[in-house]
Each structure stands twice: as structure tokens, then as C-alpha cells.
Image (cartoon, helix red, strand yellow):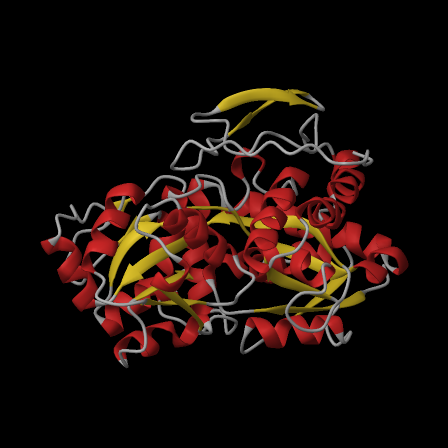
Length: 396
């Protein structure tokens, strides 16, 4: 078998695990791939390396393929999201001083209720809240937007968004550069351990099934290297399925800890993998269901309705026309290629490529290529349902 090299960029986050496991457990090698994982210092660096063809594929924030395809925020490039690598896995944390004022304002400190947390947060603010996010075009930014804008105390000048690379989030909090942050694990746990942060909410409390990272490639790469993309999809599919099996979690933590790709100790990797989150120094862990999903509940399927929701949020924040943005986003989430690559090996696939985002408050059976499958709850905290049919037909 001819071995094909794939240069794949990533940032050192727990949700890069599917790529690390695909390499370490030889799922990529079994597909004839040599997966070269190349760490990037920031999301902007990863974006530019992919656009300039120094990378073939990348672990990307789910809004990045949409924003790059729309030509927003840096080098424009048409990017395809081949699959979702992870769902959820983010945390919102506060500095010690803000957390103390939130408690004084009646916050229950329960790591669960977005509405009550927002009430206390706006009551505690004594000026614009300085909020750190890893990148302007990130699920972190969109979740914050959905959460904070729903509060009657929100105004455009009540928050100040500051981009901070994930590994620097704890340092920025320690240096009093931030009041609040939203980041992927392990960097929230690191902020608790190093920076005295208090974790206020998991991202899943705002949207129960938020696509967090995707596997992105340039659109021209999918055309010229379709078989490589199919092999990559199969390899990462096997890795995500392995990761979500309960019996494999201890070994997953061990592999990620010893891997040079993360270079992080076990105690900051373990919470995201097990869903047992320590929200403040000295506390007992909070059991957080579905904190981070790699495979279950069709987590990997690139729903075009998720892409449309992302585009609608970006359009709202950046003043672009929502209709064309949502159509462009739908075409960037490649549910068609996902089906082509994984259908022939017997993977059960949803019967449709779009759904009503936010409509499921509990596990729900839907039609699939093998009969029916169970999808997980995907409700927004405020009960909103996103229904925006495409303006023109798309192939499934």
C-alpha cells in the first residue's frame, strides 16, 4: 500500500484527541496515511498555514471554515469541514473578584444555570466586562453572544471581547487582563489550578449539542485528493468511536498524557475526558453529562443546519447578509463527502443532512440509513429553535 503523507495542524487541546488517537493507535496507518501532526501557536497561525497550503488538513474551530469561506478575518480561502471532531467541551470561567461579586449578587455557583449566572454577572459588573475568547470566529464567541444578548442588561458596550490563545488564558486572568473567559479544555482547568478562576458554566449549558471542532481542508484539496480525504475520514471515525467507549477512557488519558502533542499532565486532561469538572480550587468535581462528545449521538456528522446557525450568528455580529452566508456555510459542511466515505463501511448515517437546531430536549429516535438512530438533546438554554431552510436546493 502506498503511504500518503497528510500534514495536519492542531492546537494543544483535549479535543484534538481524535487526531492523536488516529495516529497513536495506527488507525491512520491502516488507511495508508502518515498523519503528521503539526502544533500551531494560535488559531490565526493555523488559519494562515492552511490557506497558504503549508497544511493539508487542520483541527479547526467549527466557525473557521465558514468565516474563511465568507472571506472574513484574514486570508480568505474556501474551506470544507469534512466532519465534526468534537461536540461541547468548553467552559466559561470568571476571575476570583468577579466570581465573589456574583456570589454576593445571589449566584448559586452551581455550574448549571445560564439565566441566573447572567443575572449575577451583570449585577457584579462595574464597567465593560473584559472577556477572553481564543479566536473571534469560534464557538466560544458565538455561545457568549447567544447567552449574553438574551439578557435585558446587555448592551453592545457592556462587554469587551479580547482574543487570547488558549494556552495563555490562565496567564491573562492572573495578570488581571480578563474578567471572564470562554475556552476549551484543558485550559479552563488550568486557569482554575494556576489562576484562581471559578468555572461558571459549561458551554453545553447554553447549547446542549454545539459542534466545537471540525476537520477542515481546503476545498481544492478535496477535489484533487478525494481518496485521501475519504481515508482520513475513515481513520478519524475509528478514533472517535474508540474514544467514546467508556472502557477506553483510562487508556485515552494515558495516551494523551504521554503524547508529546499535548505535553500536559494527567490532572488537567482527565476532567474533560471523564466529564468530572473541578469548578474552583478545593471543590469536589461536578459530574457534567455530555461535557465532551467525540462520537456518540452522531456527533461527527457535519449537519448543514449547524453550519447555517453558525453563519447566522456570524452575519449578525459582522453585518453581512445572512441568506447568502448561510448558503455558503451549508456548502462548506460536507455531509455529502462524509456519506460517501463512511456509508460503504457500514456506518449508520442520518436520513437527512439538516434538522431543526435546538428542537430536541431529550434523546430522540430519527430515521437513518440503517433504520433509526438516537440523537442527543440539542436544546438552547432559552428554548429557541433555529429553522432556516436553504434558499436553493443542495445535494444531500
